[in-house]
Image (cartoon, rainbow over all chains, first blue to last red; front, side, top):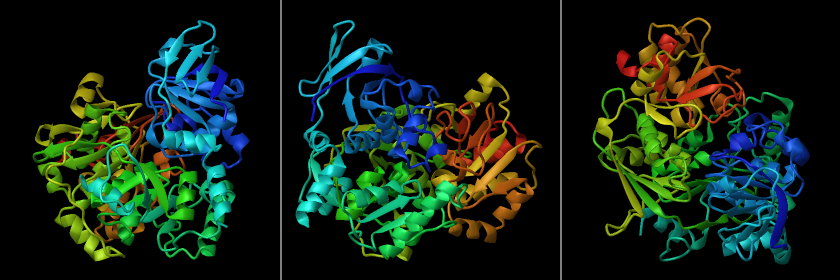
Length: 168
Length: 420
């Protein structure tokens, strides 16, 4: 697993809940690309279409609060995001993100320090985020062992496939 | 240890557990609602063949039932096929009701168990002394394959609710007051144990309303020590033997909050976040008459017989104003039948209410009561984020069913004490 993630960013606010990340009216959709096209439409309909591929979403407190819908990280991944940096995450969203290979990293105060369009490099091993334009570095929390194990396997699905293949 | 820690220890084959450690615990019951066909896809993608135990998992069709469109109908069809193929003992199809209501009614929720569902409001089952928590579809698929899940043992905070609720103040007002104090991220990853004299005398319905909204503070799970009302309820229905767990007297909570319930008033959670809680009187004093387009009584938070009963009492022989709607959604078929027997459905219909299928309805913006841009709705449900019940430009106030009923009698936000 690549422990360094570099990408252009968009910045959103506090308490961005799962209804804003992925509105309830689209919950019956199952095609990943279609799901991606509606990502963050509860905040702004134009975000998904303009999102920089391989980019990073930067957010304030309690990102992903609300429902348990896995559509939220699926939408973010299919919109083109590889990681989310936030002041804090809601619990179910964090689990879902890790399970699906979207890297969630806690970096307190980051959303107030950077702007849309900047490029950030995230070093997961060292727990540091560097902003290219300003050269500033910020500390972030390191992911725990359980989360890293799942992310390193590429997500929970490859991990379980390998486990069940061994058993059979 | 706390009762929740004892439940986690018991289910993971351990004598004790420590806060912060990761344990792998057996899941006593797993529920998947009809938003999560992805669970079935992930199950097969990971190599699953048959569920680990056909008596310990079930689908509930509540969010999109009856189906409002072709996509959801196709989802239901695929889930039914999975249920049949796996010979699931429990299956709750269209019209059964909201998952968190039908499960206790069916006797699969009881003290001392772990219930996991693909729904964030699974914290509701703390009302029964169970550990209930929500997960996403793929986590759920791993449970269907293995019957277990990894958990981080949570910090446990205490919310002590003391005193008797004054007239016009209901469990929904109490939990809104707690939310306003603790905030939307005040309990992230933690378990909330609701204690105190108010809780000790609270009935099953009130307990469910309070535990239901623990997740709105970010909590992993909620807990209330079962009282006689809970034990009587469960004794009549439980499909398995169970064991009530008790917190050790020397257990230390990470933090304790105390709330004097006797000092409370009717509360509102104002647009557009759940933690935006203010007393109804202060909101009306500040804003004057807040005109309403729709009232909504329903959901796992506020759609039980007790909720519909107080609405019927307030709206008896009254009528909602022209050009407004009052949508009433009984939380389950059992609740609907009981309310029909008691005459509440008839009373509310006479008052101009629209009665819809037991289920989730418009709570999450699925169908049966969607809001247009600029509309204002007062609701007994659990979330009011932008777009929750339809348009991003609609406004939702969360309130007790009594407040909803009183407000719809007038067509503007009204203190239920005016009618009691």
